[in-house]
Image: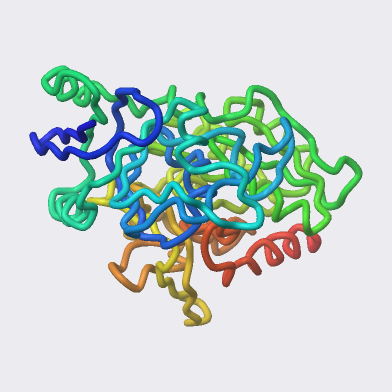
Length: 360
């Protein structure tokens, strides 16, 4: 099997799972563990994921979770990546919860796994040239290059990961939170449920404005792709920004959607932030935190309109990591306070959001 990049680079390795040719944006993640959570994160939809940690598969994969459940460690009901690229795949696995190998899991969902690749070299190339389109190929190389140029990461990528209909969890719980889902990780929902909330989980194309009227607060979840392709959702959130007086909180894609709805701008990053050790600073308290991140777009802080300001900043590259409104209880963060995988240093942000809801 080969990995072919749009710049002509060809890397040959060993196929360890599905014998399937796929196309996608080639991105890298530097986390040492957490591949089960990462592979099921809807933010990776449409992407070929490169793991930089050299040994992958050591602790296997748990049994499938029951349909409709939110059981850990899975972040959705299926594998979301187009394909997986590693340096060394370890088929012999050992963990108390392990019931199958990583390759068996990938093969069961028809997802290819390419092993034997110099992932350090590949990651350096992606850092230097930026995220590229690519093709995991079992057949003709020229055909792969052509199809790699045709990858579409627009509206259909969001529809493929959003739920088909609205689902209510913990009916009778308080407060009642509307979770807007354009590819939201399950641990965001779990984080609210663990704090006693009732969660109304609605697809981004639902009547968000109408649902918000019957809820005590709104949380805009994460998701894949370019936020500007979600014009319909941006318009709905703009209505909330203009007329809503209850707390509104965003995570990852939700940060970008809130910024665009407020009148700000976003831009594609060279190679994004995909790791569990990104340092950020709260500009209000000057406290610093280590965070889990997975995004390829960022809010441009200088584009924020009057009444809005940056809230968090990335200490590595200075990019925006959160915004807040000065006169309404609206704020959001670019990182993942729910982690999964990664540090939970900023999990208190869910507590603060629910405290804001309780004060209204």
